Amino acid sequence: MSEKPSSQRKILIMGLDNAGKTSILLSLVGKKNLLTYFSLRPTEGLNIENVKLMDTTFSLWDFGGQDIYRKQYLDDFSDKIEGSDKLIYVIDVQDDQRFQTALDYLEKVIEKLVKNKYFDIDISVFLHKYDPDIKSRNLTFSEEKVGALVEQIKDVITSNFDFRLFKTTIYTTFDKTPIF
Image (cartoon, rainbow, N blue to C red; front, side, top):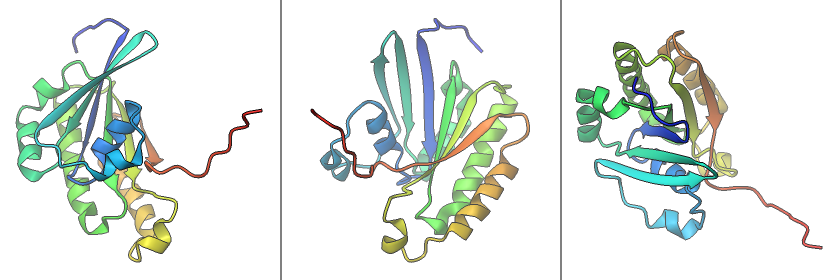
């Protein structure tokens, strides 16, 4: 792993197409206008955004999730992962028909991390689109399916890695801040 100044961090955002990776990226760079999310187009290839927070520059790499791109990334993974500090892997919890495809891709990414000896990378798995009204809007959603998915994720990510799982959404609940 190459050394870089402590004020720079590289974060990879990976997952299947339509998982919500670009929406997460927009949220991370501070673009939280909901209308922005409705005009999003699928990421073609790789999109890199840099954002400076205090004295640290974060380089956020948003990997397009279509099958053709996923294969390309795996072929030249060692080039893409070079200098990375964190991997955010995004799974759309509302797309239970593609859970296995998402797990298969995650497994291939983990295999590449092992092959390239990237054991110290911080891994977060975002169970995304866990929206406040998910149960009323998505009739196929169930906590049992998500629980089974979590167990499968634990099996895929080897004991060589520390990782965390998060339920995420771009939608926030009502917020009340006093002004006087």
